[in-house]
Figure 1 (cartoon, rainbow, N blue to C red):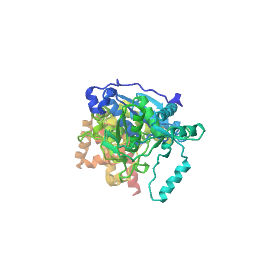
Figure 2 (figure 1 turned 180 degrees about the horizontal axis):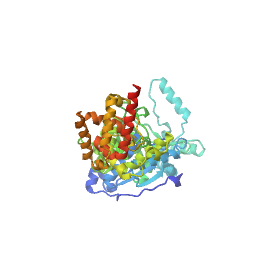
Figure 3 (figure 1 turned 30 degrees about the horizontal axis):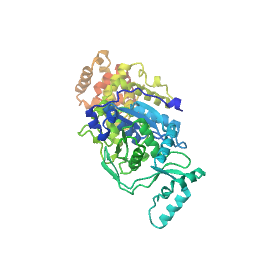
Figure 4 (figure 1 turned 45 degrees about the vertical axis):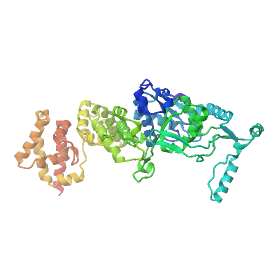
Length: 526
């Protein structure tokens, strides 16, 4: 697995920051020199795919590193062997790559550091910061149950920490199983959180906690501190769900004599109902959003605004704009609300702003996939789609202002290349309600548009259409709206004269002929 997954991405920036950078990006005064090189990490567990919350955490770390000219490291926390899956690791890497979050170092794997974690645990024992705990899981469960029956809370009482060191060593030498627990001092644990400000856990709120299990496996908090210290991580930016881990990790940093990073805890993401975000709110993996036709730029823009504000009314950002505007100090203290409608709106803005050439390949792929799913030949169902790149780009430019996803864009493009169109029944009822008259109007229009010179520009086409309305002494809408249905199959489209020009003479005349035949058949069966 390591050989397949150990991809090292090129480092974009020299990991040094100016004095201005140090002031902006935080850190404690006594560590100022060490913070010349900002180093952050994203540390997902490969027990599932990369979801919205994890992707936002990765993005905030990446933006922080890019703004500071620092290093963004990826660490895969794969110590849960029973639940970790290589396919999840691959999906996480694929999700980060799709979002454009390039990794400077890694991925490194937490499981590779287990021996170092054990050495750090034994160092704590040697220094007297940890002690052997011989209490079995059964004994601890019985005490917990007894406290519950008495209506009291249970916390480990530290009894093994009061054993004479010689007795403790003798029991261990005799082969009695033991875990290692850290001695928690009787003092408040405080830190200045980069997002929440002053944080404090009062004395007595944390029990002596295990760092090495009796089977020799390190516990999460020790592994994280050991790995972050080894990697020289200077800023730990993660979700609020890790707040309860932070005081324990601070104690471990101090006990190990390692420099303390700055901590910043990002509020959780909630669904519109105020409950923690889940699949029922649309919280899919980021690759599912890719497959649904969202652009990386739209998704990154949306994720950035989930809990961060630029301080003004701007909402649409490209990646460069986000790097320039991002500040950890502007991450909000309250939870963000996941709004799928907002994601759609932002993605639509990015589709509208994207060069047509960048969208063309996706449109061709989507239309081809739809054709294959229906058992049709992609080339035959949309002739000219792949052989007329300039025309395709012109059509995409014409229609890209409204769609919010790539499939929606493909649906707008499809009528321009389809052999035929299906008429929307509501549009037929509204704009073709006089079939005999409409057939006559469309037939006359086809005659006016038959000459090749008519299609030389949009202005000439508009003149011909409006000229027919004047000649027939009807409002222009009596020609334009039925024409739109004939060409696009629906009552809504971009500007009809631009549609005529983009569709081209041959296809326009074919669509008008088909519409006339459809209407004449309706008249005949009326």
